[in-house]
Image (cartoon, rainbow, N blue to C red; front, side, top):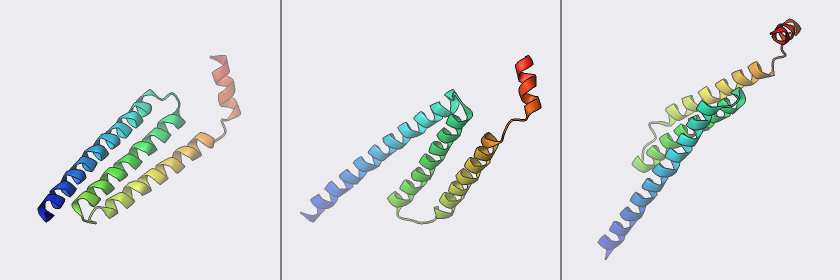
Length: 108
């Protein structure tokens, strides 16, 4: 009786792992498409943030499935890379364009 319950729980856990793999793979592929297709720099940055977040979730899912905490420093480092990258791009995008550069582009 107990062995049947344990087997049922293992089957449910395997099914949930398979669903998580499929969902995370689809999310990563959609984000990767947006990184490649663009159309603007901001779209690519947002998509790369989504891709990085998906990677952090994959690492966290692996940690939960295997029952360990060894990859927490990796997750923190990935989160820091995402934050610093987003801030750097936001500062770059928000810079005003110099007046001389505008006139040169208009002449072309």
